[in-house]
Image 1 (cartoon, rainbow, N blue to C red):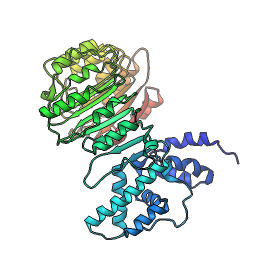
Image 2 (tube, rainbow, N blue to C red):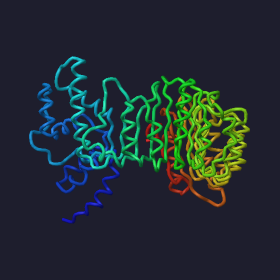
Image 3 (cartoon, rainbow, N blue to C red):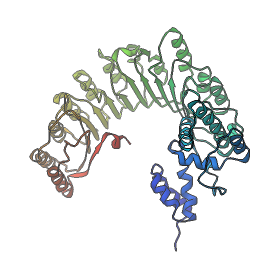
Length: 481
């Protein structure tokens, strides 16, 4: 029988990376398929369950098993035979928290022990698992560790230096051991994506880790609820944020219940993507100075919740709108700022994707008429936003080169778009010159939406006529995953 080469199989199986059921089925076909798919199945430690941890315990070296035995930790594994593969070596994405959690669940399921002993046993088993990972993984790609009570990670594990040397993604909290940050700064120089959740404690060594990076491209900065900005933390942040290399092209800042200065962003001249997530407009400290900063490469701007008022964002767009290709502003709460919408239309001529919670039809009309290169627009409908009928009719009447309409149906609004209204909109689209098809996506919270039986029949009719290129009705979780 003809057998596909391993590299072809691998490319096919890559599409099932997040589908463990299908990957497991591939592993059962034959030894050849198993040898290819098992590496993908075990790659992402974020997906490990208790069964995975049970198998890893069976793979522990004799010395580690003796340590478990001497501490009276008896875990019945799924096999008494020597494992066929070196499963630990396949891991490229390692989550310390995930491993701890699944070990704890495994121990809970196998024997009754007190909470205190459970924590002790979990710590011992976890340390042996991590030591095996450090020994067996030749080059870890992604590592995450968020501080949690009774959870530790020994950065001095044998093999850790080689395992972590080529790390490209790091996710952690600011209050883990300073020694971890120090050692990582001595080992890892090529981290490309860094995510730090800033808690009340900010460990020494974070600035050093950032400063030694040669190719840092993305930074997610999360100020957690427990974090409080004061004079001391401002000094720490000021020192830390000056360490960013000029290689940074993507910055996400998440701030809750805090005022936070954004002046440091002005130095990041190579930014291509900027996301500022604040829950109150007053928290945009120093944006009146940032509004004059120039980012010649900025292509994506996302401000999903509160946004700077008093024309500050308008001035920012005047300086930086020319190269913007995507804008997402105040999607979930709506935006009645006509001056802001006019600024987008005036200063962002190359916009291709746009999403905003529009509440007035005139705002949508301005955007569609002025942004001639717009290809995709997402419009929130229902409750205080435009109705689905208004959004669809405006898109049909005023859009010029757009080929995708995404309607986000707000759950609180109870209405249907009638089949007559839907067909009328599609008929008007067919009268446009030149004729072209468009994709229609409906994101909904509930079943009261555009995808009724009558409407689906009409949609299918216009798919056959070539008016609708693609139709999809989905929920929020499916859409963003």
